Image 1: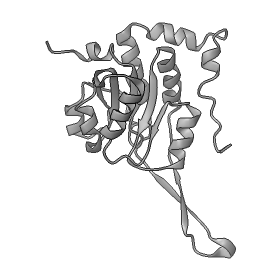
Image 2 (image 1 turned 180 degrees about the horizontal axis):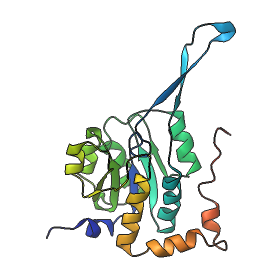
Image 3 (image 1 turned 120 degrees about the horizontal axis):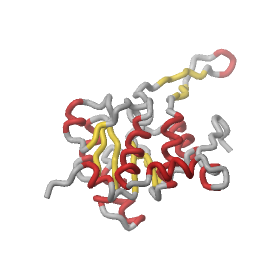
Length: 203
């Protein structure tokens, strides 16, 4: 029997994201850092922009009983900071072959590959998308990536695509409205402890 995307989404316990082009719009900004006493720059600081809608989506995912994480080929302090702010359970950087990280997560969490969703945008994501229970492509993904996805988000990376994926899963599980209600309930202590960004504070 062929499973629909909703059938697949109902089984998901962990949702994993690529970063560049998924949680960001794909732009990577570099700022040269001048050397001492006006010497030429020898270092650069990397900047990325993230969507607040995705951050709120991570809270909804947690309220829906899911765990979240990122698997990215690049290594960036901004990714580590954003993942810390969102209290993501899984942070894997420098991953040229992303299924290695997925297999490690499966062992740690005792889940099957069918219980994992992955959100990607480029061909480096295809090996994971071909294996996981729910493969999601963002609206701005490469055409061949969208062709192999079970679900394509209405929004592009960096513009709420991560939130789209989370809401699709929660809706399939029948708990989206309850998670939204819980996220704005001031008597619920969980939402208040999530997505409290510290910005540039490294401590």
